[in-house]
Length: 337
Image 1: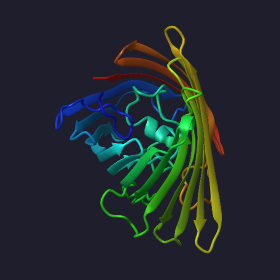
Image 2: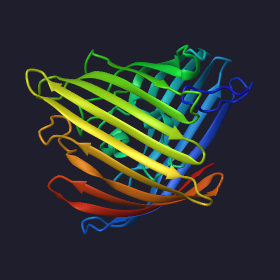
Image 3: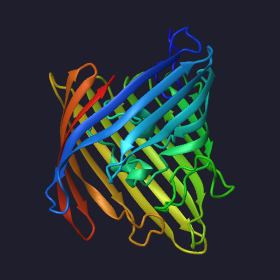
């Protein structure tokens, strides 16, 4: 049997030291009814996903993404780089840059739009450089494994990392080399996969860090998350909720709730989907001053052209605080190679 990495990806069978390369990419078109924005064809991410099995219990994962910015210039970023050691189902350790195990979506779907049903990630799990509110990436150590629990299928999560910078637009959000303080972020969680209900996964977690924004008091950050997911080849129902709590030293505490729900049946030729999402940050929030209230529905269709390509069309309706609502329409061709 082929081995699996900490993120559930297959690794080469009995070919130690052999590197396997998989590619993902997407192109599309998107526009809104707002006169201030143009409709455009676009190149999305091109993702090179590399695995190498070193021994029966260890391997390497590397994920490099090529992506353009709002100035039409392309950049390259090493999104994941992990040494994985998994001597048993009860202990799986990854060291390097990983996707933080907050909730479900962030470790179930990485940087490939081909793998996910919708055109884009939920707002709650938007990447840091796209304005996301969560520490999607981290550098440090991630542990996971089974807890003896019979048919309950209980698993644990424990992570220690640099955390993120204090959301300055001038700083790289992921602290790849130097942490802004000596305090490390911690993340603990549990989830279950009961044998009695195939396709069900539910869990909760707690992320803790200390932020040091320039010219401001220090801020304690706690992120509480919970989810319930039911997913089979014919039907998916995803529900996640997160509460980000920022406590300013000697001052006020701010709570930013966020959630999304997504439902999608697989019909004969197409997979329709519906998502509703919500984020609400106080206008005085010291870290999320650019977030505010953002909520609304998305409706779309995904059509699998082949085993390695999918075409999607999606309509979005966004509602905001003290701003007019926005309507958007987009199409996307995502593929693996």
